[in-house]
Amino acid sequence: MTATKSAKRAMTKPEAKRFITALAEANPEAESELVFTDVFSLLMSVVLSAQATDKSVNKATPALFHDAPDPAAMVALGEEGIARHIKTIGLWRAKARNVFKLSQQLLEKHGGEVPSDRKSLEALAGVGRKTASVVMNVAFGEDAMAVDTHIFRIGNRTGLAPGKTPRAVEEGLIERIPRDMLRPAHHWLILHGRYICLARAPQCERCPGYDPCLYPDKSAIKAQRGEAP
Image (cartoon, rainbow, N blue to C red):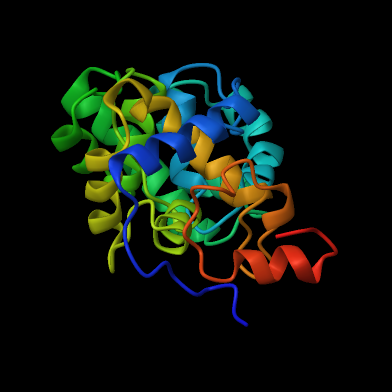
Protein backbone atom coordinates (compact mmCIF):
# COMPACT_ATOMS: atom_id res chain seq x y z
CA MET A 1 0.00 0.00 0.00
CA THR A 2 1.35 3.42 -0.91
CA ALA A 3 0.20 6.77 0.42
CA THR A 4 0.91 8.41 -2.94
CA LYS A 5 -1.69 6.45 -4.92
CA SER A 6 -4.08 8.67 -6.85
CA ALA A 7 -7.83 8.52 -7.32
CA LYS A 8 -9.01 6.67 -10.42
CA ARG A 9 -11.30 9.50 -11.51
CA ALA A 10 -12.01 13.14 -10.82
CA MET A 11 -14.68 14.18 -8.36
CA THR A 12 -17.90 15.52 -9.77
CA LYS A 13 -18.80 19.10 -8.85
CA PRO A 14 -21.29 17.92 -6.18
CA GLU A 15 -18.62 15.63 -4.69
CA ALA A 16 -16.08 18.46 -4.72
CA LYS A 17 -18.55 20.73 -2.96
CA ARG A 18 -19.15 18.10 -0.27
CA PHE A 19 -15.41 17.66 0.24
CA ILE A 20 -14.64 21.38 0.48
CA THR A 21 -17.66 22.01 2.69
CA ALA A 22 -16.45 19.30 5.09
CA LEU A 23 -13.02 20.94 5.32
CA ALA A 24 -14.65 24.34 5.85
CA GLU A 25 -16.84 23.07 8.68
CA ALA A 26 -13.86 21.41 10.36
CA ASN A 27 -11.64 24.51 10.13
CA PRO A 28 -13.82 27.59 9.48
CA GLU A 29 -11.18 30.13 10.56
CA ALA A 30 -8.38 28.77 8.38
CA GLU A 31 -5.81 31.36 7.33
CA SER A 32 -2.16 31.66 6.35
CA GLU A 33 0.29 30.52 9.02
CA LEU A 34 2.88 33.03 7.85
CA VAL A 35 3.28 36.01 10.17
CA PHE A 36 3.04 39.34 8.38
CA THR A 37 1.76 42.87 9.02
CA ASP A 38 1.22 44.29 5.53
CA VAL A 39 1.34 43.37 1.85
CA PHE A 40 5.11 43.89 1.63
CA SER A 41 5.91 41.60 4.56
CA LEU A 42 3.45 39.03 3.18
CA LEU A 43 5.17 39.05 -0.21
CA MET A 44 8.61 38.75 1.40
CA SER A 45 7.44 35.89 3.63
CA VAL A 46 5.92 33.95 0.73
CA VAL A 47 9.11 34.36 -1.33
CA LEU A 48 11.16 33.12 1.61
CA SER A 49 8.84 30.16 2.21
CA ALA A 50 9.67 28.46 -1.10
CA GLN A 51 11.03 24.99 -0.28
CA ALA A 52 10.97 25.92 3.40
CA THR A 53 8.44 25.68 6.22
CA ASP A 54 6.30 28.57 7.38
CA LYS A 55 7.66 27.91 10.86
CA SER A 56 11.26 28.50 9.77
CA VAL A 57 10.25 31.69 7.95
CA ASN A 58 8.33 33.01 10.96
CA LYS A 59 11.41 32.54 13.15
CA ALA A 60 13.62 34.59 10.85
CA THR A 61 11.37 37.40 9.66
CA PRO A 62 10.63 39.39 12.86
CA ALA A 63 14.21 40.67 13.07
CA LEU A 64 14.40 41.13 9.29
CA PHE A 65 11.21 43.19 9.16
CA HIS A 66 12.26 45.17 12.22
CA ASP A 67 15.39 46.29 10.39
CA ALA A 68 13.74 46.52 6.96
CA PRO A 69 9.98 47.16 7.16
CA ASP A 70 9.66 48.48 3.61
CA PRO A 71 11.37 48.19 0.21
CA ALA A 72 13.64 51.21 0.74
CA ALA A 73 14.90 49.87 4.06
CA MET A 74 15.37 46.40 2.55
CA VAL A 75 17.53 47.84 -0.24
CA ALA A 76 19.48 49.86 2.32
CA LEU A 77 20.06 46.71 4.36
CA GLY A 78 21.72 45.16 1.31
CA GLU A 79 22.00 41.61 0.11
CA GLU A 80 24.52 40.62 2.78
CA GLY A 81 22.45 42.21 5.51
CA ILE A 82 19.38 40.33 4.33
CA ALA A 83 21.37 37.11 4.17
CA ARG A 84 22.48 37.45 7.80
CA HIS A 85 18.84 37.45 8.87
CA ILE A 86 17.70 34.44 6.85
CA LYS A 87 20.56 31.94 7.15
CA THR A 88 18.29 29.50 8.99
CA ILE A 89 15.97 29.30 5.95
CA GLY A 90 16.66 26.91 3.09
CA LEU A 91 18.25 28.38 -0.07
CA TRP A 92 19.02 31.55 1.88
CA ARG A 93 21.69 32.90 -0.50
CA ALA A 94 19.43 32.82 -3.54
CA LYS A 95 16.55 34.18 -1.50
CA ALA A 96 18.65 37.08 -0.20
CA ARG A 97 19.45 38.02 -3.80
CA ASN A 98 15.81 37.81 -4.79
CA VAL A 99 14.54 39.82 -1.82
CA PHE A 100 17.09 42.55 -2.51
CA LYS A 101 16.33 42.69 -6.24
CA LEU A 102 12.58 42.45 -5.67
CA SER A 103 12.72 45.42 -3.30
CA GLN A 104 14.65 47.41 -5.89
CA GLN A 105 12.01 46.56 -8.49
CA LEU A 106 9.20 47.70 -6.20
CA LEU A 107 10.92 51.07 -5.77
CA GLU A 108 11.86 51.52 -9.41
CA LYS A 109 8.67 50.27 -11.08
CA HIS A 110 5.86 50.48 -8.53
CA GLY A 111 6.60 53.44 -6.27
CA GLY A 112 7.46 51.13 -3.39
CA GLU A 113 4.05 49.46 -3.45
CA VAL A 114 3.28 45.79 -4.09
CA PRO A 115 1.28 45.47 -7.33
CA SER A 116 -2.00 43.59 -7.24
CA ASP A 117 -2.09 42.08 -10.73
CA ARG A 118 -0.58 38.72 -11.67
CA LYS A 119 1.55 39.95 -14.58
CA SER A 120 3.33 42.57 -12.47
CA LEU A 121 3.77 40.23 -9.53
CA GLU A 122 5.26 37.44 -11.63
CA ALA A 123 7.73 39.91 -13.16
CA LEU A 124 9.31 40.42 -9.73
CA ALA A 125 12.45 38.53 -8.69
CA GLY A 126 11.68 35.25 -6.97
CA VAL A 127 7.95 35.45 -7.67
CA GLY A 128 6.33 32.64 -9.65
CA ARG A 129 2.71 31.75 -10.24
CA LYS A 130 2.22 30.15 -6.82
CA THR A 131 3.66 33.12 -4.91
CA ALA A 132 1.65 35.58 -6.98
CA SER A 133 -1.53 33.58 -6.33
CA VAL A 134 -0.95 33.61 -2.57
CA VAL A 135 -0.48 37.38 -2.52
CA MET A 136 -3.48 37.96 -4.77
CA ASN A 137 -5.61 35.70 -2.57
CA VAL A 138 -4.51 36.81 0.90
CA ALA A 139 -3.71 40.48 0.35
CA PHE A 140 -6.07 41.51 -2.43
CA GLY A 141 -9.03 39.18 -1.97
CA GLU A 142 -8.81 37.55 -5.40
CA ASP A 143 -10.20 34.09 -6.11
CA ALA A 144 -6.68 32.84 -6.85
CA MET A 145 -5.69 29.25 -6.12
CA ALA A 146 -2.04 28.70 -5.24
CA VAL A 147 -1.04 25.07 -5.79
CA ASP A 148 1.78 24.01 -3.49
CA THR A 149 2.97 20.45 -2.85
CA HIS A 150 0.15 19.85 -0.37
CA ILE A 151 -2.63 20.97 -2.69
CA PHE A 152 -1.06 19.13 -5.65
CA ARG A 153 -1.06 15.93 -3.58
CA ILE A 154 -4.64 16.38 -2.38
CA GLY A 155 -5.90 17.19 -5.86
CA ASN A 156 -4.56 13.92 -7.22
CA ARG A 157 -4.99 11.65 -4.21
CA THR A 158 -8.61 12.51 -3.47
CA GLY A 159 -9.77 13.09 -7.04
CA LEU A 160 -10.63 16.69 -6.24
CA ALA A 161 -8.54 17.93 -9.17
CA PRO A 162 -6.28 15.33 -10.80
CA GLY A 163 -3.47 16.71 -12.92
CA LYS A 164 0.12 16.04 -13.92
CA THR A 165 1.22 19.63 -13.32
CA PRO A 166 0.40 22.28 -10.69
CA ARG A 167 -1.30 24.36 -13.39
CA ALA A 168 -3.54 21.43 -14.36
CA VAL A 169 -4.50 20.90 -10.71
CA GLU A 170 -5.15 24.63 -10.34
CA GLU A 171 -7.49 24.62 -13.33
CA GLY A 172 -9.31 21.57 -12.00
CA LEU A 173 -9.84 23.20 -8.62
CA ILE A 174 -11.17 26.37 -10.20
CA GLU A 175 -13.54 24.28 -12.32
CA ARG A 176 -14.92 22.11 -9.49
CA ILE A 177 -14.90 24.25 -6.35
CA PRO A 178 -17.92 26.58 -6.03
CA ARG A 179 -16.88 30.14 -6.84
CA ASP A 180 -17.96 31.51 -3.46
CA MET A 181 -15.70 28.97 -1.72
CA LEU A 182 -12.65 29.26 -3.97
CA ARG A 183 -10.72 31.93 -2.11
CA PRO A 184 -10.88 30.35 1.39
CA ALA A 185 -10.45 26.87 -0.13
CA HIS A 186 -6.81 27.77 -0.67
CA HIS A 187 -6.31 27.79 3.11
CA TRP A 188 -8.57 24.83 3.88
CA LEU A 189 -6.63 22.65 1.44
CA ILE A 190 -3.13 23.73 2.49
CA LEU A 191 -3.84 23.12 6.17
CA HIS A 192 -5.59 19.84 5.41
CA GLY A 193 -2.50 18.66 3.54
CA ARG A 194 -0.17 19.95 6.23
CA TYR A 195 -1.87 18.28 9.19
CA ILE A 196 -4.20 15.48 8.01
CA CYS A 197 -3.71 14.38 4.39
CA LEU A 198 0.02 13.86 4.92
CA ALA A 199 2.36 12.76 2.17
CA ARG A 200 3.57 9.49 3.66
CA ALA A 201 0.94 8.73 6.28
CA PRO A 202 -2.46 10.24 5.51
CA GLN A 203 -4.62 10.43 8.61
CA CYS A 204 -7.76 9.08 6.95
CA GLU A 205 -9.35 8.28 10.30
CA ARG A 206 -9.28 12.01 11.13
CA CYS A 207 -10.35 13.31 7.72
CA PRO A 208 -13.57 15.36 7.68
CA GLY A 209 -13.81 14.79 3.93
CA TYR A 210 -13.51 11.01 4.18
CA ASP A 211 -16.87 10.17 2.57
CA PRO A 212 -16.53 12.07 -0.75
CA CYS A 213 -12.77 11.39 -0.97
CA LEU A 214 -11.90 8.96 -3.79
CA TYR A 215 -8.48 7.88 -2.48
CA PRO A 216 -8.33 4.11 -3.25
CA ASP A 217 -6.58 3.11 -0.02
CA LYS A 218 -8.55 5.18 2.47
CA SER A 219 -10.55 2.24 3.90
CA ALA A 220 -7.44 0.10 4.31
CA ILE A 221 -5.60 2.90 6.13
CA LYS A 222 -8.54 3.55 8.42
CA ALA A 223 -8.88 -0.17 9.20
CA GLN A 224 -5.14 -0.49 9.74
CA ARG A 225 -5.39 2.10 12.51
CA GLY A 226 -8.20 0.33 14.27
CA GLU A 227 -11.08 2.32 12.82
CA ALA A 228 -14.11 0.98 11.02
CA PRO A 229 -13.92 1.78 7.28
